[in-house]
Amino acid sequence: PADAASSGNLVQRAHRVIPGGVWGHNRYPAAYAPDAYPWFAERGEGARLLSTDGRWYNDFLCGYGAMINGYGRAEVDGPAVRRAGHGPTLTTATPSSVELAELLVDLVDGAAWATWGTSGSDATWTALLLARAHTGRKKVAVVAGAYHGSHSWCSWCNAPHGRHPEDEAAVVTLPWNDIAALDALFAAQGEQLAAVMITPFHHPIPGESVLPDPAWLQALGVHCASSGTLLVSDDVRAGFRLALQGSHTVMGFAPDIVCFSKALGNGWPIAAVVGSEALRPTADTMFLAGTFWNSGPAMAAAVANVELLRRDDGPALMRTASDQFTAGLIKLAEQHDVPLRVSGPPAIPTVTVEGDDTYAWMSRFAVHMAAEGTLIHPMHNWFLSTAHDRELIEESLAHADRAMARTQTEQVAAPVAAADGSDGG
Ligand code: PMP
Image (cartoon, rainbow, N blue to C red; front, top):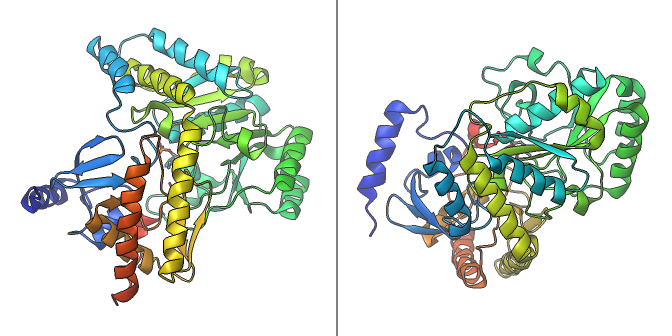
């Protein structure tokens, strides 16, 4: 039963000891609609999340991508919990690290070795250091508006507090899918670029997602090869949802380094960097460490999680579910006369409304969806998992039908986009 007092109390307590109450993506909807959007969750089961108010939500955010095989998936959590029972972090690595490296090298196209971190930011930073060590160059090129983590070299996106321009002095930006700009960048600075880091498709936040133009990808590959610049795929957000071989195999490019995190451990904190054979000697000489980088439970979870995705063809399951979901949403939008757009691969859909520049419509829609019992974010892309079955999607579409009707008819003041609502990640 709903017990608003419990979360109300938690929110008040949180505000006293956690600046803003919560950090990260939920800050925006929580601040915009403090009584309508769940602040704290008690647990998850499959694709459903139980808030501390005792309400169940169909969850289309999946821990912002971390959950891919369902919350509380016994086949994944079992090995992790067993490993944790032997000591969550030991002085040495555990056999799971070798098993996981073998699995990734076996699966991921172009991977000859793997190494670890506990977050996507760990992975992209490791990739950058490796590229610099290998090339002896300093600069890195990234796509304008792309998010590669919270570390100072790449965290400019609308989050200026505490940053200094010097932090990004070695970072140059290029526009997505623009061949002329790519040619100009390499003509001017190709010999200074240690790496170009791209996401497999462009998924800025806020904003529509854009798939790569094959001609641009091809030009990028040719430029990188001819100037000795490494190509890094930041597959932190998309990884394992589109293909187990790496999202680059779907989009059609051949990176030297691939970064994974989010979905790798089905919610257990783990990141991996995998690289080509040519980079092995450099990777051999590097010293990088993190207190929890060899922690066994997340690695045991990752092995079980990826094995499960392979056994069940997880990407195909997610494709079917997400096609059903996005087709349903588009049909509803037509019925309600909403110029709704779904961009990016359906398993990681970005949902926007034409002309909704302040995200006012989407913010109201998110509130009505929450009231119905489905959790979305007004600006961040959504995620599907193998646990999003036909029944849950049908129920969520019924929620969307009523939420769209309400969003269309009511007149509410536009919310002011919070500075922390669009940090790109
Ligand atoms: N790269 C991409 C593409 C991401 O989406 C994110 C996180 N949203 C990161 C890197 C950073 O990962 P983390 O938040 O785990 O540090």
